[in-house]
Length: 387
Length: 192
Image: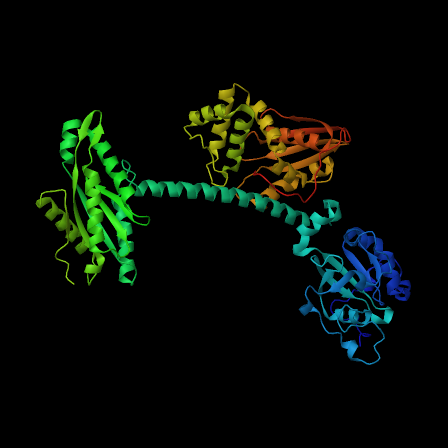
């Protein structure tokens, strides 16, 4: 089937190999002889070249390919001892010859590459993928040229490591001398090496920037004096809690705390005393709230607790009383007793049919004011919440 | 141009002269001690100011400092490895210096290394023309070539013209000492 193939694509124009001989002599020259003469040239130019003869035996190979196959490789070894055609089982093609009852190769396993006869069919292909028998993890790819069947057949290949370059270089200790100068292997290795360095630099840069971003964000959301969340952070958290509750998520309660008599402390003992009291309040709030709740300083002597999840009014009342009791404990600064208290207004998201943050905060304000009106140091729940 | 070069100068000052020297150089330039980010871009005037400030701080001449910088760079393992891609021996290495600019550009388009062209004069004598956008590259390369001669185990006489673009190289003994090891594949650690 492949006798009339010199014109076929992928076929080596053998006559071009020996240009110094007279025309008459060239015509008499057997193609295999020409190739044999040209073999040193091939080896020099293509360290990964492979010549398989018509009986599927290795006829010649380049020095780097020799290195890849190891010391054990011999001229005359069966092609299939060292290679499989294709990279995956699925790539293997059926050998058409195997369906012919008189298949001349007894060991034919019906796959291209498994016997010499099937190598004949490579003439229809321009490129080939091979897998090394000894190292199935390594694949080779390259050009493939079939030789005329009339002259004994066989196949020439010029192979390369393709994407397996790094693995091969690592496992075989290859040097630049093992590659043709025209091969881009060295550039590929160079790029891989610089790429991993650049990636290292870039991920270090990303880590530094991310750290700086987190730090900036923390500073932007933290009250410098008390280290509680600031107003911006609280507003962000409130908006999140609200959007959670409108989508059927957990309810929440807001507890607004206005300090009582704080101005008196500030005026009597100075700003340092005032700052100390505010920091004490922050510590009390941090120690009182549960994990998952959020305590914030909204400005001046006004604090806000965001209490997430369902809580009974009774429990809220008890919590508020506990906070007030701790606020009223005497605080000593530079030998001065600083006495404060707190007025607390509470709103609960469950009390609202329509969730509106402004309304809730407004009601919390009103409740806090009511607590102040009631004589300070007490807690009031929002009254106007329409059910 | 990429901060990589400025960062290398910063590392050179820190590693060879101490972090205090770097801090003072940074202060002269009004930079924070954190210095340069290797992967961010800076204007190229920065490198010149940086070198001037370092020379003033250390009381050293530019030629001295730049040659030392070259030696320092070529002895950083990642850089040494990339340079060793140039060839199996020092002569190969010299002959592929012409490719260095393009290889570096292939890896980092903004690195802006100088263009190199090697002229072979006589047996074992070469002239390397270093054409960069910053003056002083030839001096840096004199340091690099000297360090690489050591790396390949070669005895060579290497000199750069004062403030010029030419480095002259004379090979004296190409098997002077055993070169340092190099394999194409090697697990990478550290940064440029």
